[in-house]
Structure formats: C-alpha cells, structure tokens
Length: 311
Image 1 (cartoon, rainbow, N blue to C red):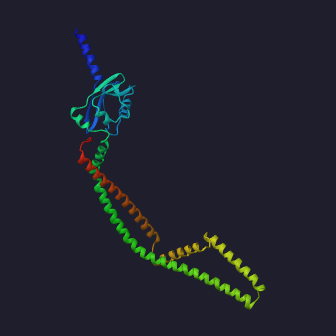
Image 2: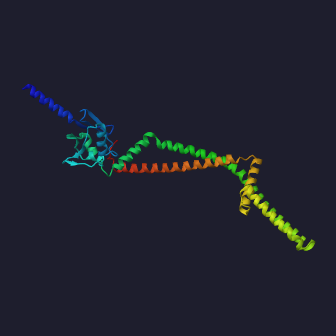
Image 3: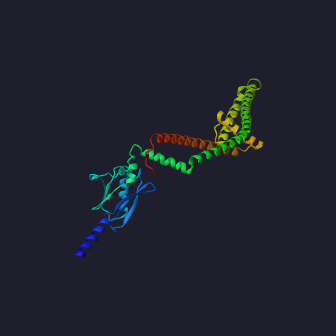
C-alpha cells in the first residue's frame, strides 16, 4: 500500500517537473524557463519584447531540443497565436499556454509586471524604441562626441582654407598669365598667316605672275596640312581653337608653376581634402539636426505620456 502511494507521488512529481514552466524578467527582458522533453531539464529562453516574435521563440525551442516535433502558444480560451505575434503583444494578453509535443505548460505573468506590460501596445511600441535609442545615445555620449567631432572638423576646415587662400592667390596670377600667353599665341598665329598672305599676294601681282606662284601656293598649302597632321600624331589633339587654347594654357601653367615654386599636386590634395572635410561636416550637421529633432520629439512624447516598456 505504501509502495503504491510512493510510486504515485513519484509519478506525480515527474509529471510536475515535466510541466515546469515559468516567466521571469531579467534586466527588463522576459525570460521563459521550460522543461524540454528529451532530457527533462529546464532551459531558459530570453525574449526580445519589441523585435522578437512567437515564431522566433518556438524556433529556439526546436533548435535546443531536436525531440520537439510540435510547439505552439495558445492564449486564454484555447486560441492559438500566430507566429508573427510579437512577444510584447503576447505579454499584454495575460497568462498563456506553451504546448510542446503533447505537454501543456501553463505560464503565468508576475503580478508586478502585468500593470506595466498592459501599457505596451501597437501604438506606443515605437515610443519604446525611441526611448531605447535615446537612452543609448545618452549613455554612450554620442551627441557630445558628435559635437566635439564637428568642432574639430570645423577647425580643420578653417586651417585648410587659410592654406588654400594663399595658394589660390598664386594660382590666380599663374592662370591670368597663362590666358595672356594663349591669347598672344593666337594673335601671333593670325599675324603669321596675314604676313604669308601678303607675301604671296606681292609675288603674284607685283614680282611674278600667277603661273609662276601657283605651284608655290600648292606646296605651301600641302605643307600646312602636313604640319597639322604631325601635330595631331604627336599630341593626339585636334588643331582646333578650343583645343589649342587649352593646350597652350596648360603648358604655360606648368611652366610658370615650376618657375614660381607652386606645387600643383599639393594644391589638388588640399582642394580634395577641403571638399572631403566639408562633406563630413554637412553629413554630421544633418545627423546632429536629426538627433536634436528626435530629442525634442522624445521630450514631447514623455511629457505627454510616460507609459512605455522599460528595457
């Protein structure tokens, strides 16, 4: 008789241990402890209230114990909850049931957490996320770091700008001299063509006749074509006005820069560095403006309603 009673108690205790399941909160996160069927050992699963779903929890249970063939969560009234339901929505429904294979685990929420969890719903989940982001910004000092970084970048930009202004004064003078040189070359070419035309005209109408000068004009014209084609082969540039202007200006710029001790490479590096710093400042100012806007919205939201999930 006693042995049968003892056997029943042992069987009851085994079943109770198999149905062991509880919900606690650790550092603001819900932790579900449940006994898995294979080894009958309690295992704790930490859930993410806002981003985690029932499907994530069930998947973790199946990965932990390969002996789990079927797992589902039911709300009060034997209503099965969808896998896409978030953990925060599950907790606001109150007590629920976790079914693993054929075993039913009844999970009850702690009394001190029910009132706070009921305040979390679809409308203020975003407020909870904003609070989390705001607390991270405050704890990590991101705003202060960004302000200090913005101050350093501004000082660096001013320093580079001072160097650029000195270089730009020298470069502006070099560019002006290069443009004058290009204009002089065009003027010289025009004068040379006019002189050649005058010589050919005098030889044709005053010194000799057209019959004598005609072969000369042919060779002069063909010689000019040979010179233009040779220039194209040597420089890969068409002998046109715009191309010739750019080429003469470029040659004169490099010559004057070398003569006056102006480094074009250093100037280009400074210009590139200045552009990068300005881009970083603009991007950082946008982030700071966004951060200030979020802080203002956060203060308005917390001033109107301070009820949201505390992570």
